[in-house]
Image 1 (cartoon, rainbow, N blue to C red):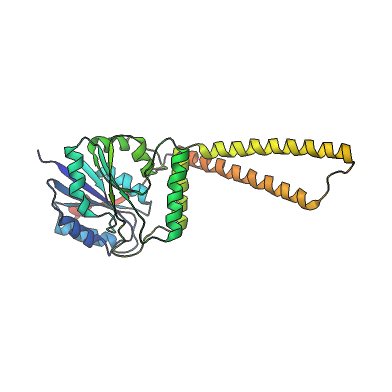
Image 2 (tube, rainbow, N blue to C red):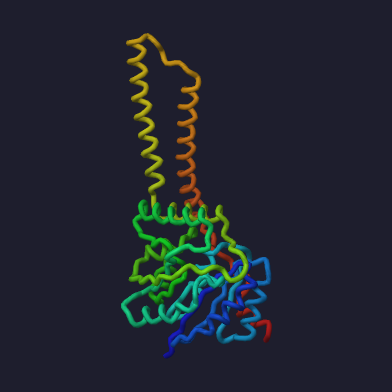
Length: 315
């Protein structure tokens, strides 16, 4: 029986990229049947219409599903993995930053060598703002220091996986998802293909600096308790420092009969301790918030429309 490769493409406001991505990827020769599964993440532009046009032209190759609103890329990835029917599954961005030319090499490694997943990593960040690149590298270093799992610096979501690995990922049904961490957590043998960074062909990225910052916090709090440990350590260290200073001031008063004075020093201490307390509460609140969302048991996404509804309407 012929094997099937499902290509999952999450999309959000990518009307200028969709057709270009499809036709460029179609030019790539692969020794396997393929299907394209577009996940429209509540786009505000004509992305869904572009996807529907492709489905109309290639109903045997193109599938799609559209969310009721924007749920985020993590929801798009999860939905795509759940709906994928292929023996092999690949995740790709529609902006062409994931080069389709790597697909034959990825498929060869996955099928001919003893690997369960072929991931990709950029060896540089050419074309990205310097500040963004700096903080991205800092995030990977921090994450690998405080977490039990290793996330490769420069690793992309662009990866090809066996059905066994996909099924293992789908067993993780948590609401707060960080796919890069989940891919590493489930294990399986992974080979990383390196390539030069490729800039977007059309449009602008939907990721702002603040959005990436929140995403990095999500990753850190999802796969390590280190922030809680750090907050506890700071609290304990501050308490010891306070006891030491109290002893110093007490001895100083006994010897020099000169009680500690100074409004400035007092305010510095009060503000420092208050800041540490708020920081610790913020860290604790982040974890409690994640627990709160998990206990609600809300769906990760809501599907508004798929190609099946479009097919029914035609009939």
